Amino acid sequence: MIPSERRPKRILETLLPFFTLFVLSFTVLSLAIYLVDTRFPNLVNWHPLVWIALIAAFTAGSYPSIDQFYGWLLRRVLFPERSQVPHFLKHLSEEIRATTDLSELANLLVNSLGEVCQFKTVSLSAREPRGERYVVISAHGWNVSDYRKVRLEATSPLVELMKAAQPKSLLREKVIQSLSWQESNQITVHFEALRATCVVPLWVKSKLVGSINLLASSSEQALNEEDLLMLEEFGREVAPSVWKALLIDEIQKINRELQDSRSRILQNAKLTAIEQLATGIAHEIHNPLTIISGKAQVLLLQKDRKIYDEKVEEVLKTVVKQTRRAADITKKLLMFSRASASPREKLKLETVLEDTFSLIAYQMSLEGVEIERLVAQDLPDFFGNTQELREVFLNLILNAVQATGPGGRVQIEITFHKADKVFLLRVRDNGPGISGENLERIFNPFFTTRTDGLGLGLFVTQQIVHRYGGSIRLESEPGEGTLVVIELPLEPEAAPNAVSVIPEKGGKEFHDTASGRR
Image 1 (cartoon, rainbow, N blue to C red):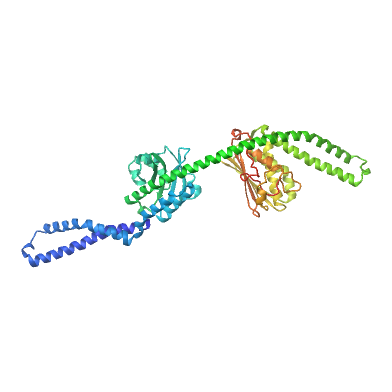
Image 2: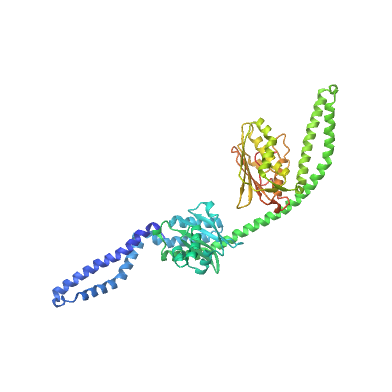
């Protein structure tokens, strides 16, 4: 269990008893010959086999006591740390029993075993309560990104072996020797995936809830029978705690899902009412605004406009400007209310991005903002509405440009994760970032920090993303710039068409790109 001590201790365990027996046998033989020669001269001529038999009897009778003595000496005097391992495992099991948080429990177990017992890698795998797979929860000596990829199906050969060998541990070398060539290859793959040479199963009654997977630092430090017995006893003690933590974690996940569902239902009802109200308001005021704006523009274009004094002309210009602003609001409201009925078709996201960029390229050159586009090769087709997606790109790019100002830098990236079948859209700027106060309200309708902003662009963007079954999140610190990440599933037509939840106070799950956004 203490690998650094394994080799010298084994050498001493082997040599000391034999060396002691040799010295004692030689001493006893010499003393016996001397006594016989001085007191019983007639016995000196005994056959050599008689003396060999006497020495053999002496050795056989003395060896158990000598071996026991040296065992005590090595454990208590020369290598006292080894005798402390059972106490350490007992103390660790008590700490684990007092822990109910799954992540905390797993980290405590793997890090304690790895650091104290000096294993190269230690991992804890556990069964998903609602699934048939075993996943690695935490590991010592691994990268997080590596162990999170490990999955073992309940029907995999290694899991079947653990079920058959309960409650015994599995040593890779012994297991391989007992199997056929083909079966041993399959088992080796699973051991290598877990980076382990020993697997200690965790049983709760008749249920295999997981395993502790261990890899010694070298082949010379392989586990012996005493180590395996200690580890199996440790596994029996901690298995109920691991299963309890798994159930608590699953209950917490279910509770969060129920709360999210309840909140989603309530918010969808609110948004449905808002959508109906927005549609009615937009239709009712859009036409009068158009008439007012048109009349004011006609007056300004009349040939005899010199008869107006400067104040009247200024008033007419203000009327035109404000009616256009109000018309823009109604246009946004109509887009929000009609989005669910927008037709969708197969398209290329990179093409939509290029079309959007061509619309604002001249404005970007005037602003003096550098825009970098990073688009992955061979992106699959996306099923969506070109106008909606162009609105998303346009809002995020303009917001980033306005946040950086002249001389700023904006990076736009589109990638695709094949494993998750998700498009990732990233918009990064080197602007001033977002304050915590604005972060909470950035997606609320009509919220803006710009004097000429409407506060609807990001609200509409969020709703479009949600309608595709996607998500939008933010990473930002004041003075550090901002990163907006949008995730869109490959097949949004399968996603629910209902509007996703908008938190009451702007939400923490979905945020915008920078303060002062549209």
